[in-house]
Length: 466
Image (tube, rainbow, N blue to C red; front, side, top):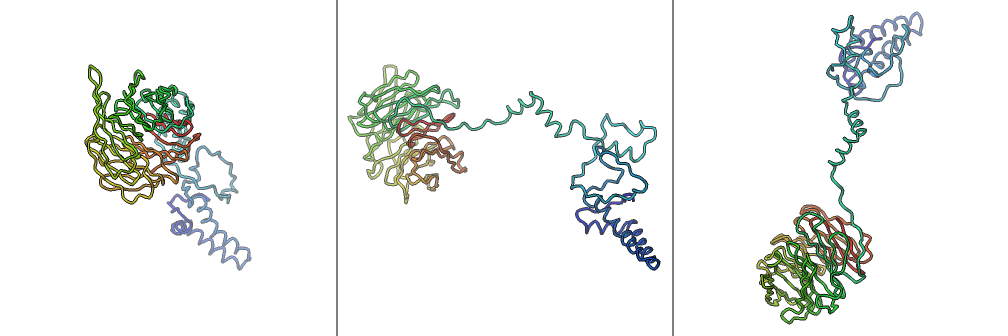
């Protein structure tokens, strides 16, 4: 039985059967049912022929057309081998139906396809076969395979793919002393210029310009072996300040590694718990904080005859609770926090402070980071980061363990935890992501540069990325 060329609906047997009842095949099948049904008076087996004449045609047509393959029998894919069919087998075989497959649209004739005019006696079957010739080499899968096989195409594609984010790794430090603070001093966005500095117990000062960590100072700026607790760099990365116990204070020239001792400024020998530096080298602002809740402000001005360092204060911006963190966004805007939920903002380089929060924090504040005015993050020992966007404070649950340090660079932020993990936020609207690091000790401080990040902690632990 040949296929019906009238359009038959697909999408299921019921829509197909509705369209089938409107064809001449259905009319013939009905006539056959009637004729063979009448002959049952001659022999009862004519009933089987009657049912077969009515039931078989729609089943065969549905299997061949109703399931999505609506091409005529002569319109087979050119890739299928032809089968010899004897006259007795003119009825379509009731084979198991093939799986559903998407009908491939007709392709426009290419120059390699023979046109009907070039043949002597074209017929319908030849024309259909020509239109449905096997896909040419410009098929998407063939192109992908060719690119894979072509080394030049593969290399070009690999170069266009973005590089993966560098992973954190532990580096060997030339000390086993606890490192309490770190600063990445990058002048631009290249890794080669991202020098890093770390300070810790016994007055040790370490430096790394990308090759390996070395000790610049082993016993502090005044050779007193006093523990150092804070380090920060100027905006251009050309000068680094370190501060610590018993008034220890020093300035290091990044290019030469030479340091100048400024210990006990204004004859103050308090333990400096942190230091923040704003502005470019030669005209930097320096803020020192202590356990009495006081801030000492220094203005460094280098001239041709030497250098001058003028101090103002100390002043207590809050109630006198111990200050736990200080940060400057530039030579004017900065923040400090204390252990009694106090956060204070300065817009004049530390000459004056105004309390901007924080109320109702469950944990003790541990550190502060800022990217500008009305924009700071404060970490706490209950694993929460408090975000300030002037005048609103928003708590963000970051970790289950205590957060010991935090840093900012534009919209990016990074915090380290006592359990040795680092938590990072890629943007203001992004969430915090945890990275577990195989650190030998608890992490106490983290610094985020343009091209690298460094965290330090107990037992000389240094982990770096980039």
